[in-house]
Structures are given as structure tokens and as C-alpha cells.
Image (cartoon, rainbow, N blue to C red; front, top):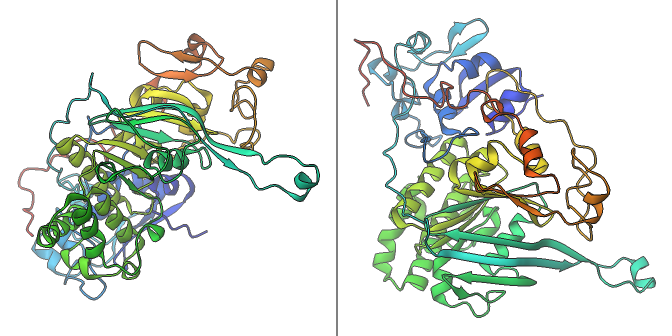
Length: 503
């Protein structure tokens, strides 16, 4: 099998060997365990530093994106093609490096691989400047507050339903959830595909009409759909869609796409909008000349960065991000995550962040809600919910995360059964798959919400908190050594007299 992916956790779990490519050249080739234990090329080290690990959070750890951008195929630099972005570049790097034999069954295309192997120099990218202090949200009024939110869709009737005169069945994509997001805070929303995350996000944005419940933005009731929402709401509430292919008008240039919300919603002149367009492109790691291109001339990652820049254009007070970094490589992902942290620290905007990547959510979010079949299963501060999880569904999700580690980690066994089709289901929504199924009570009775006063999290389950707490492993053994790994730990010391880096 030849497996090509940005997901380094999957690579660590399923592959025997890893080849690291950059601008068409092999930079490193090694057995998987050796490569993750000790990368010998600055680019490989940079990739590992870009990925958030389970247990890391923006308050305690910083991602280190690789500086600069990958060169265009017709503009490759002379010598080592990674030299303009490399923290270890010296004079010899102006000569093109061969693929050095760097150990048993290993090869690395770096003039300084032996220094890296002996730990005489650090191959890590410089740490970005720390984000400013985030605007305090404790005790403040929530920017967004929803109660008993529901989104139901009518399912098409089959011929048998028509003949039997049965009514259309309702698909309960979102079924009575409460949420609140304070100024300067990020709520992460996680769950499997089909759990209702996107439907909830689109209902908040007004792109689908909610079927029930109330929604307030800065204390002002919002109508169910876009009708009735003025420019003051559209300006302050923006969304980044999951699929950039469908989010950008193919007939508008990037510059026009970014100018329109600035001029339409902020009332800026064309000259002022042009200046802001250049700043937005720079913020998401794109050159200013990209403004002249059409979406069809961009890669998938470039389109997503344009979509993110467009969402930030009117300086929103609430940003809804639906899988915004899924299509991006890990270096651009790290840049975007740092950008989200910096912009939130600067402007104090609230955010609803949706992702399948629990490590990304754990890094970016302050609070998290775990969603299944349109309902929340567990909510609370992100560190409290993830370490350790109480609800069996949260536990299943975390145990299924592929870990970036030199040693392959056992993943959770596939649970019995599959997600039931959306529709009527009595009792606990998770009872058909739950490994701690109690019997009749789980089938017939809706679970109560248990609130853990010590941690601030709430669990939607029949099992008492004491039993859920006792059933969990200690947080230190949930995932081994995430904070202490070379790729996520502090800067490695360079030996005295080490070679001086040059641009």
C-alpha cells in the first residue's frame, strides 16, 4: 500500500516506512519508528512541530509553523530547495545536497543531518511571538446563547409509505441543545459524521431555519433564518465552510471576493478595501499577487485560506468555523490555528469551532461539546472533558485518535453496532452502541444531566458520576508522553561553537 496523507498520526499507526517529500524531492526516507523518534531533516522536524497533540492547549503550548511558503515549481532556489525556510541554513546549503546515507535503512537530504543526529544543533523552527492576553470572558454576557435548539428535516416518503398513508418522518439533525459562547472564548464541537454539527452551525448562521428553540446574539433574538437579519448581524457573524470548492464564486477574483464584504458590510472605500485585502492575504500566508487569480487557479489549500480570509474581512464578533483546516497541510494548519488564536486575542471575538480532529479542538477550544445524533453527550472545559472523559461516547472518540508516536498505539476496538439512522429513538441516543449499556433504563428513559462541580463538566448519562469517574484511567496514562516528546517539548540546546545559521 502506498498511503499519501497530511495526517501524521495515521502514518505513525499504519505504515512501516515513511518518505517525506518537499517540492518534488525526497527529503527523508526511514522506518516509521526511527523517523518519528528522531527526525534528521529540518523539514521533517518542522512537520512534527506543526501538529497539536492530545493534551496540548493554546494556553500552555505554541505550534511552530514552518516559515515561508513552498516554492513554485518554476521558481526553485539554487542549492537546497528548503534553504529559504530552514533554521539551520549555512553557506554549504547553497550547494544541492545529495540523499545522504544517515543510518540503517535511513536516508536524509541535509548537509547537517549528522549534527542533528548528535543533537549538536536544533532543527526546530523559531517559536512565534506569543499571542497577546485574551480578552477576559469570565462573568461576562455571552455573545451567543441558544436554548433548546432543534433542526428537523422531512424525509422523503417511499412508495410503501405512500400506499400505507404514513406521514413523512422527521430527521432530527439537532434535537434540543443548549449552548453559550462568551466574548473571547472558543466552543469546540466534536462528533462523528452525521452527528449534527454542521446543521447546528448552519442554524446559528441562519443558513438553515431552526425548527425550534431560541437564539440570541448579544441579547438580541435572532430569527430562524437569514430573513430579518440586518447588516449589523451579518457583519458580526461570519462562517468558514467545510468545502472551499463550494464557498467561492468561480467568476470572482480573490481580490473581489475579499473586497466585497469589506465594502458591503463595513462601508469602506475601494482604496481602503484594497489595503485590507493585501493584509488579509498576508495573514493567511498567501502572496499579495494572489488577489488577481480566480478560484480555479488555486489549490484546495489556497482556496480554504481565501475562505478564511473572507470570513475575517468584516472583523466578526462571532466566527463559525466548520472544519476549516481539514484540507490544509500541517504547516498551513498550524499557521491558521495560530492566526485564529492571535485574532481572538486581539479582537476578543467568540468562536464556534467544528472539527473531527480532537487534538486540534483540544488545542484551540476553551469549552467543548461532544455531539451524537443531534444531542450533546458531554460538555465542559476542554481539558476536563478530554482528560479524562466520562461519557462512554467521548471515551470512544478519544481512544480512536491516531497518535503521533514512535511506537504504534492500540486504537479502540470497533464498537458493536453502527450509528442508527436518524429518526425516533427512545431513551439514551447512544444505547445501541454503548459498551456500558445498563439495560432497560437506557432504552426507555432519557438520561439525566450530571454536573461535576469540581471540573465544571456535565454528562448526559444514566451512570452516576462516581461510577463514571472510577471507570476512567488516570489522565497521565490516557495518552503517553505528549508534552515530553521531542517534537512538542522545549528548544533543544545547541552545543557551544555550533555553526552559525545564515539566510
